[in-house]
Image (cartoon, rainbow, N blue to C red; front, side, top):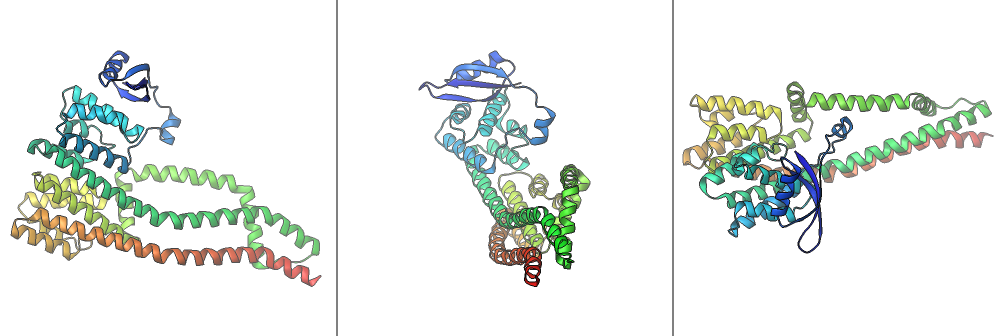
Length: 402
């Protein structure tokens, strides 16, 4: 059961957040064990259907996850016991979502679960890769090194996601800005244009007639369009989470001109880094390959990884299996894997492939941004010029003829 609490530390600073516990009394005892003076504890109500739609649950960002893992690794390297380290992290969590996460981890550890199992229970934050790596760290006795590596991994993922968002944000901003300006001009000025042309008994040119018709349509059916867009967004979102939808979207993403190739390189980098890292950590190759497919975030590569796993189980080499899918794994990948298999350094070869494609993706994204921005500015400028000319030019010509 989750409780919301308000408390103060020994210095008197206010603290608030959420904690998982069997009862309010158990929550108070847990908070007191962290050196907090409890002011108030109350159960969290069940989320309503509106909360579920708008996503009231706090999410742990990749950036905050990296900070948490880095702090965790540092404390363990300083010989702080596991439980004490987590209790310390409660007081310096980078966000409320991380604080909730740490409380839940502490609750599981207090119940006797190992850290890997506690992490496995938090699938919304940690994927299979994190679980397997932490389990490997527990077995090898190198948990602090594993957490430090995972912090690096989360930082790399956050940097990559930031670059993807940066590449998409500016074009989307320009397009939305043009749509808003166009809609405002069309809806507000179209009736005035009709009145002006009617007053002079003139027939508006084709561009103006299209603008007037579009404005009339938006005024009458604009709300229908908005409802339709919201409904379609909801349907597509639900469909995207189904197996069939994930498969279709995965293929569509890979088929996008230019961007599809960049995404493919991103998936290859994630796959190779995940598999290489897990193998170096002592995880069986079959498990590493399954986790690697899921780490890509694309259903196509997840499906391919399952086929590759079946081939490995029958005794085929990983390089020969990867070579069967040149559309998704270029020859460079299979060749590097083959070298790793022959030298007994498969994990290192996979990491080198990942590093190569990560750098390639970063370079490709930067090139795309540099090309896309001026092209979009010119296109949006031309569209705005056409829109304005459809409004002002006919009126100017009409005034000149009077």
